[in-house]
Image (cartoon, rainbow over all chains, first blue to last red; front, side, top):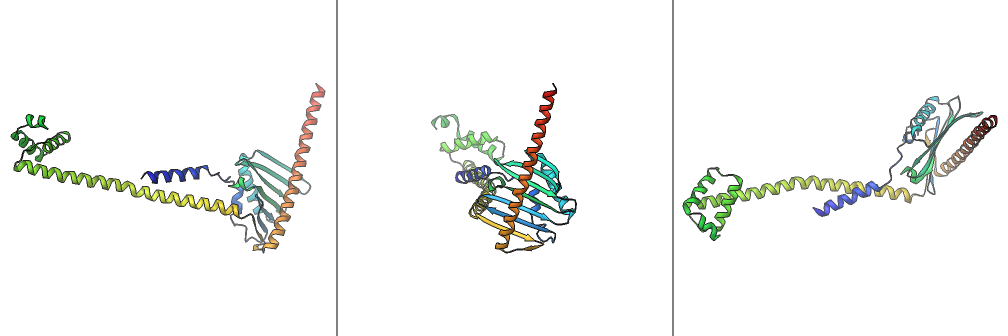
Length: 127
Length: 158
């Protein structure tokens, strides 16, 4: 009985000390829902401890809106937020800190429903 | 023991045994009677019957205690197994994520592309992201400069 209790305690401690994932709304966009979409390019790239995920959209306002909504929902968690208009489109940028690392979130979109969206950061930030 | 023998006569012990059989004794009194019977040497039909009854009662209590213990032990074992499985799963995921140093998956227009092409597209995307961040940094620096200029103007007008 004692051994069991010690084992449970050890496991619970191990699980607790594990870092928490950020659980951002924008992360849910990479659940595979756009993988088969003809107007989308989805890329997931992990290299030397850096983690990058991006979506490029061509002429699909619906998807751009979904991405913008997800960013909007994550805005309260951002340590830095900027939104401005350039000649080639609107730039929205967020920085979220998780596990002591920065997660960069960006969306560049035009009025025709085309855009480029990404999440990038150190792997540690996503664990 | 001697003290008990002096205090109780066989009639008294038999009377107590009768009360025990009739369920007239409290739990404490039953325990006391059990103690008395264990340490005295009186023997009669009713005393022997009472001793047998006490032995049966003791056995039943032990069985109940064992069952009670078993009832809690099973969920505890299941919980331990689940916790262990969870721990192993998390550790495995954690390690596998760390071991896989270079991983690239790209879908273009609904089709998964091969590894070489995926790397090219991903690297182009990363370059695009860096450009994006440069634009944002530039914009932020521009905004900061504007704010500073505005503040300087206010300070100047004072």
